[in-house]
Amino acid sequence: MDLVRHLRFFVAVAEEGHFGDAAARLEMTQPPVSQGLRRLEKELGVQLIRRTSRGAELTDAGRDLLPRARLLIDDATRFLGEARRLHEGSEVLRWGAAPLAGAAAIAAVAQRLGGVSLGQEMVSATTVSLIEQVSAGTLDLAIVDSPCVTGTLIAGPVVVFRRHVVVPADHLVTTATRPRLRQLAGLDFCHPPRAANPPAHDQLIDRLRESGLDPHLLPVSSVEHLVATVAGGGAFGLTADAERLASLDAVRCLPLGRDTTALRLRVVHREAALAEVADVTTAALWKISKAAR
Image 1 (cartoon, one colour):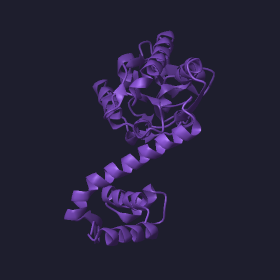
Image 2 (cartoon, rainbow, N blue to C red; image 1 turned 90 degrees about the horizontal axis):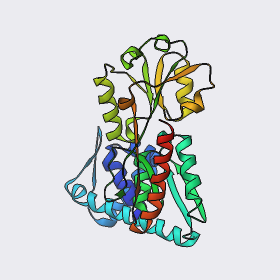
Image 3 (spheres, one colour; image 1 turned 90 degrees about the vertical axis):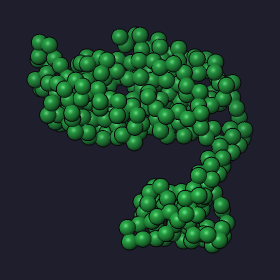
């Protein structure tokens, strides 16, 4: 039996509280998950999950064993990550960045890292995913939005980026003498979903409310998604790449609520040996943030 694989079934069902939701999370159908969990319970000799009409509940044994199952999965993931790095060669720098960082910042970092590594591989993912990958060893470092839960990772200083508010081109705020965030009342807010980084998301929403806005959230997955939604006329969003959108006729980028809408980025890594590379990455972020002010 593949113990780690079956432990993933157990953890997914325990955390989701439902076999169907656990299967969707694992990108599987429900029967193999249910059958796999039964096989794990038979192998261990204890019932882990109690099947109910509402879904699934942890038994006492399941509650006791869940933390250990999570640790075993994390250890296996880190082991595979380290093995992969040894196989593919340690000279390739693997790093990631949250899409919120913007194309200009990511390009500047890639250029600087090209001077300190023989090769690099970059991925774009949510802050939560990036932290998991750095913790597992599949990434060397990552640029994430702050605040965030970094666990045992080494976190660099916070670099503040100015963001512009993206609004429909014909919105009244674009012609206001003294435009304010509160003038966007009635528009939905386009932003990545809360699950991408709950602490930063909650902080931003709180700041918008302090500025007189309590918008309905429309989750978006990319800059293109944001622009299309805003151009439709009923929403606004935030961007760190105002110059990139300046040529578009359907939207406008306005410097509203600079402190409220600012983006805070930091570099996280796991190994102390990567401190110098992390410093180079942070320096690139500082340079591009100053140029954008």
